Image (cartoon, rainbow, N blue to C red):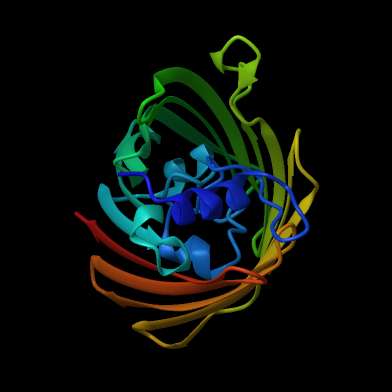
Length: 275
């Protein structure tokens, strides 16, 4: 049964208004690390998740699997779950993943396949490029379902030993659910600066063609070898974020929380294993 209260909240997420300005439902956070850093992931090396720069996979040396869950504003109807895989091959990596969002009356799902490649230039710098195809599927009770394939490309360049630059263009093929109903297209640029060993600052600017510019930023610090602390923010909509992670060998666990200026808190949890 569709509950009107949940539909109202969902519409607040996807329709710009005085109460809530969103990029799109597809601009979902894909890892607890990203959630804690204000979703500023464009220049993060080796990042993983549905929102990650596809070029970042080329910087992940071991094979890895990442599990993620997120619940918007404490509502079970607005849960998101995902799994992402990275397999390094021939100086690059293959990547894949799947995710779901919503509940029985409204469900979004996706499946991703792609690849990334990196090479060195200069004495110590690296450049990475990546591309993935993502099949999006939406099902609405009593209305039907639709699907489309979007292509997302990204690049990541190590400008200096401590400074990285990234670019991501989402849905560059302009896919449509149906005639006149397009998937969101966006362009993001970002910087990641390692100000000191164990202390990183990230900053992104993301523009969806249908929504205002969103500025995103965060800091990540490692006060103790197994512990990582994070905090961040976003504009359009305004959110403040925080979280922490624990890395024990090949295993990593992360938790995060986002606070929306109107709608409240959204928790995230992630788990990664490498081998």
